[in-house]
Every structure is written in C-alpha cells, then in structure tokens.
Image (tube, rainbow, N blue to C red):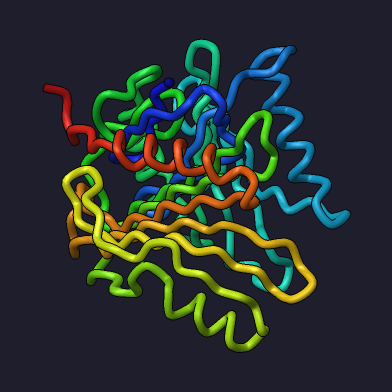
Length: 277
C-alpha cells in the first residue's frame, strides 16, 4: 500500500494502482506540481513560453517577468476575439520539482491576480502532505478558500480495464444528486441497456455518510461493464466536508480486483488537518 494525498484528504492505495492524472484548484487558481525534466528549470520554462507563443500561429504573450525572486511568469491572451481575457502563468522551482500556477483574469486587473498568486506561492511547503491543501509533491498552507476542487485518476498497472476517480469540491449547498442510480436507469431505458443493481446503500467513508452504488451495465452490442460510485453531498461552506465523488469501473472478469481496490480506497480515506499540529 502507498499513501496519496489529494486536497484535504489522504488515501492508501494498492501498489497496483498508479496516478494517471490529477488537477487542483484553489482561489480559482489552477495549481499543480511536476518533476523538473532534464535540462533544468530554466530550460523547461523557456520551452513553455515558446509553446505559448506558438499557439494558433499567433504570439499571445503580453509580458514576461519575475513574479517573485526565482519565480518566472508570463501574461498572455487566450482568445483574439476577447482581448480582455488574459492568463497569468508562473512556476516556482522547489528541490526536485516545481510548483505551477495558472490564473485567469481580466485586462486591467493584473495586479490583483499577481498579489493572489504570490500569496499562494508563499504558502507552499514542498514534500509536505500531512496538513494543508495537498497538490501532489507538497501542500499549500494558505487559508481555505470558498472555491476548492481536486480530481485524481488512478489506473491499474497490469489490468487495463480497472480505473478509479476521486473528485472533491467545496459547495454553497449540498449536492443531493445521490448515488447516480436515477441517471443509470434513465440511460438504460433510453438505450435498451441491461442494468443490474449489485448494491445500493448508505456507507460511511472518512466519517461521512454517503450513498454507495454498484451496478452492472450492458448496452446493446457493447461489452458489459461494472460501475461503482460513492457520493457525499458536502456541507455548505466547509472545506473539510466538500462534495466527494469516488468512482470505479472494470469488466466483469476483473470484479474481484475492482472490489478489493474499491474497499481499500473507501476504507482508508482520511481528512488531513488544515494546519500543522
């Protein structure tokens, strides 16, 4: 088993599962970490700016500068038809990786966006996953935001049909969509798919009571697939109790492995403290 952190939570996953993708957003700013490739951080940043300049055959770059000492940044446009829409992108090298931030803004409001991004940058603690808002290879210790969201995709390293997803998002009001059974039934009715409900019940995960659904779905002329889903609606305005959706899927032949990994994920999910204790 190995420990993974994602936003305000950590989870233990079987060694057979590997991260296939992840995204995080806080204060409406995309935040991520990535290993520094061969050639170093400076070369990697130069390559990134070159990629931006080459978009759509036009050069959308408005300005390149240092947002803070050792933190290169760039402002660029994202749509020639909307010149007021701009993006700030900045990276901060941290040991063996770097922290990347992407913030959308409006022309004329750049200074406010820069101040916010500086505050986020200053709160980053490399290799810390025991508290704060985890973004991969470290955590942000800035105060919780009204808008936070994370998404993590896991895939089985040897059984390609097994995949899991974990998503969390702060909410203004609880998302009472439930386990998704109504949606699955509507899909089956409209397509003629065979739907078998394997489990539909309440389940406590990380001290939170949500809806667990396990189904088998077989659309006409398509392979049957198992789909698992656990949903917690979230508590309004509470970053420690966001909306949570955990999903898993596999072919029927891999059901045993799916169930084992599913139970491991749900049983091990734990919140992490907002601050260092």
